Amino acid sequence: MMAAFDTHAAVKRLRQAGFTEGQAEALSETLQDGVAGGDLATKADLANLATKAELAEVKNELKTELAEAKTELKTDLAQVKVDLVWIKRIGALAVALLAVPILRDLLS
Image 1 (cartoon, rainbow, N blue to C red):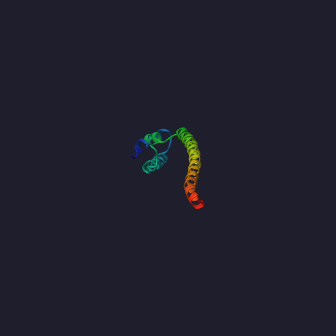
Image 2: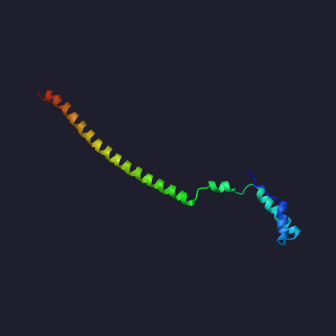
Image 3: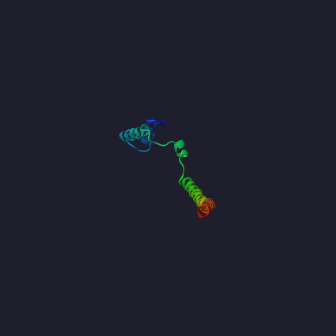
C-alpha cells in the first residue's frame, strides 16, 4: 500500500516555516520520491513485527523444551541399554538351554 503525500500542502507548510519556494519544492519532491519508492513501513507493518522481548521469550521457551527433550531422550536411551542387557542374558540362557540336549547327545 502506497502512502499518500500531498506535495502542495508540504510546500505550503515549508514556505510558512521560512523555506524559499525552491527549497520547499525540492524538499517536497524528495519526500514524494521517498514515499513513492514504497520502502516506508506502515503502522500495520510495525505492529506485525515481533519485538526483541518476544523473540527472546520464544528463544527461552525453545531452550527449555530442548533441554526437557534431551533429558527425556537420555532417560529413554538408558532404558534401552537396560533392555539390551536383559535381551543378551535371555539370549545366552536360550542358547544354553538349547545346547544342553545337544551336548547330552554328544556325550552319551
